[in-house]
Structures are given as structure tokens and as C-alpha cells.
Length: 238
Length: 200
Image (cartoon, rainbow over all chains, first blue to last red; front, side, top):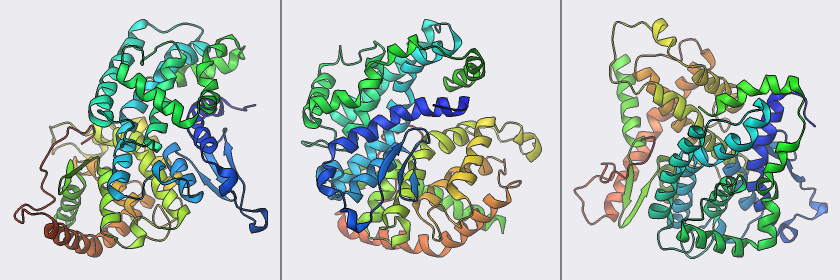
């Protein structure tokens, strides 16, 4: 339930970011790390409406910050965010680059193919998608050649937060029928390894919303809300 | 006065804009990654990247958000090579897009709030990164601090904190790295490799 157009847009955006945190939340064996009740430690919950994690009175936004916070708080296995400063720097390097590259493009595929048409009632011109796919192509090339190279995972032989953050964004075009893994065998293999490392069931559970996003096209939206949101959504494409 | 201020920020700018860091055979790009690496390698005073989980998370939160917000909206706008000196602040202000203004508003209301610095009572990497980005429009001639007293005060605090400490630590950092590299004649801060990082 949302009350305003802004909240709805935030909700949709954060669901996707939330996938990242969810994936993390589920992969860390937090049953083991969960502080006992007697310690009175706060509950950690994901607020999908407000783009944040809430831990007692402490609220935190930004997927990367959330992942780092959880990994430190729950002392998750070292490979997620290595203590070796050079390996760690590679994760930081990827996370930094990711923002202005993959993250700038991949989610737009969902907006263009499903979410914006949902509100405007019309599909967008194909050039829009083409533009985004071209940008994404360039980013993917850099991703393969500069970050992944011939390694199993981004920073080496073990999976880390960098791979998680990357995969969640890259699954978005897949969810709307732009399978970016199709012509990219190296990326496809990397994805398979990430799925295996996370666990197939968990992986698909975390991406359920993204992979079924087309079902959103069938929902009815209040015409007034449509009118309010359409221009806001169009702005997002710029 | 003004020259001194500009000089300080030029120095900070040089440090922040190193496109790549080379530490022996280890090369690293992305300014945020470089800052974090240096802070951890040289065990700089805790406040730069606090060990307290929640304070650290605040720094991470800002460093993450700034990529697609202040950085893109601020820098892109002022990449123009022509800096006509005759244009007044008033005129330049009209070029400031709604997006930059929104980003600045968010910065004040969400990240800074009523605290002296982003993470709380002490300066951190988040403030450094923020001040360098926000100084770009200023250096291009648009003083965005002029009508924003809260930001102006914050900037003053950062200047004070940076003035004494940063250069001392940078000097120490340089001395440390120099002792690690075989080539003693190459200062670490000289851009030795441009990796074409977007945004730099």
C-alpha cells in the first residue's frame, strides 16, 4: 500500500535495490550470527517503502552501504568483503565503477519496457531501448575486460559483494526479455558460478520479482496516479 | 585570502583527482576506492573512516549516493571550457539545473542535517569527497555556497579541518609510500596511468 506517487516510485525503485539486500540477507547464515535475544540487539528488517534498512533506531539507505553494514555487523565469511586490503580495494573499485556504469543503464531496461508504459499507457519508441542497450553493451565490455577477465569472480577465485551487486542489476534486463547473457559466454559462465555460489533456489527466490516483472503490466492503476507519475517517470530516463 | 583558499582546494583537488594509484605492482582506480585503500593502509586517524559501524555506514552511504547525484549533476554542468569572467553569479545560477539544486537540498537535509560533518562531530572521507565535488562549480565561477548558509558553514569547518590535518597526513603518506617503492624519484601522487575512469 502506498499513499503518494512519490512513494510508489520509490517503492518500485527500492524493491530492485532491495533484491540486493535480500540476496545478502538470505545468503549470510544469519541464524548463526543472530545475536541472542538476551543481548537485546535490535531487529534488522528491510523497509521496502523507505529505501532503507532499519536496525533499532538506525536507518540506512544505499544498497552498497547496507551490504557493507550487514557484512560487518554479522561477521560474514571473509570472502564477501575481504580483510586483505588489496582484495578489498578491488571490491571497492568495482562498487564505485558500478554506479556510473552498470547501475546507470541496466535498470532502465525495466523502466522502458514495463514500468513507464504501465503509467503512460503506451510503449516507448524503440530508439530509447536501443540507446540504453548500447550504453549497457559498452559497460558490459568493460565489465568483462577490466573487472572479470579470466577470473572465476570479480576479485578472484571467490565470490564477493561485487558479484552480488553486479548480478542483481544484470538480471533486470533479463527480466524484461533483453537477455544480455545470451551472446556473452564468459558472462554466462560467471552468472552460473554466482548462482551456484549463492544456491540456485535462493538465487531465483531473490530475483522472483524481477523475473516476473512483466506480470505488473496486467495490474490496474488509478488513472489519477497515472497522470501524476507519468512525467516523473519520463524524467528518470534522461 | 581568496588566493590562499583557492590554493588549498587546488591541492585537495590534485590529491582527489589522481586517476590511478600505484603501490608496487598493485594499481587501483576509482577515487573512492583509492581513498579507502589509503585510509586503511596508513591507518589514518579513525575519524576519516570510523571503525564504529554506524558512523562508518554513514560515510559509505554518502560515498555511494554521491556517484549518481552530486557528482554527475555538479560536474557535468560545469565542464564547459569557457569561463566568461563577465558573467555574474546571478546569471550563472540560472544554469544550475533543478537536478543540482535537488541534489544539494538532499545533501543538506539528508546527509548533513544539523551535524557539523556528514558522519557526526568529526570530519571523514565523505566530507572530503563532497567538498571537492561541490567546489567544482565554484571554481567554474558559480558560488553555490552563496545562498546556502548551512553548506557554507560546513565548508568552513571542512577547510579548517583539512588545513591542518590532511596535508600533514598526506605528507606522511607520501613518505611511507616512498619507502615502499623502488623508484624513489617518483612521487606517488603523480598520475602514472590513466585508466579512463568515467567521471574523472
